[in-house]
Length: 294
Image (cartoon, rainbow, N blue to C red; front, top):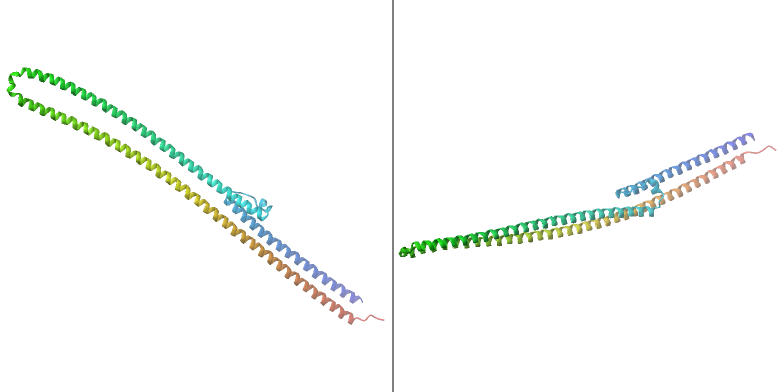
């Protein structure tokens, strides 16, 4: 009887140790699964954090962990939208600065044109006054010369025989002086017309430059808008693909964990049943061998 009790205690101790070992193994497995889960969670939090940092939004992993997946995606979209608005605002400021610079440039250009026009008008007026002065001086000189000629004619009245030849030379000289004066006036008029044509061409050139600059700024703004739209579409598409991949990976992890949990539970149950059956068989065999004294 003492041997039977000792053997019974040994079997019970063996079963207790086995159960304790199985409990420790289950706890170790749960700890390992928890460690892997935390690693995955930390990786996901880090991915979200890095995505936010790309848009200058700095959030701690603790704050991200407090959000569910939908709130995290909303936070990323909000950061992306803020970054796009900031970029558009910077682009708008640059455009405003360019417009102001263009305005100041045109203002300086117009101011310079006005100064040139004033100087030109002053020069024209000065030339006109100088021309009138010379004409008056020429008239006075011609009058004086005419008076001298009349006096000389009276003095040389006895020389009438030489008059035709003398008058011919004088008329020729006067004709030459008149032709020179006409030529000078034509040259001045031609120069004036040429200067006016140059001014008109310069003004047309400035207008064309202004038009080209306006077209360039308009095209730059259009290309910038197209680029912003393209980046926004690509970011939305990338986030959608990442979100779908993350959800698929999460579903796969959950399915794998569920399959493993079921397999482990089935294996443990089979083992437990086998051991219970073995223990029952052993006890039955032991009972059949043991015959208590009468």
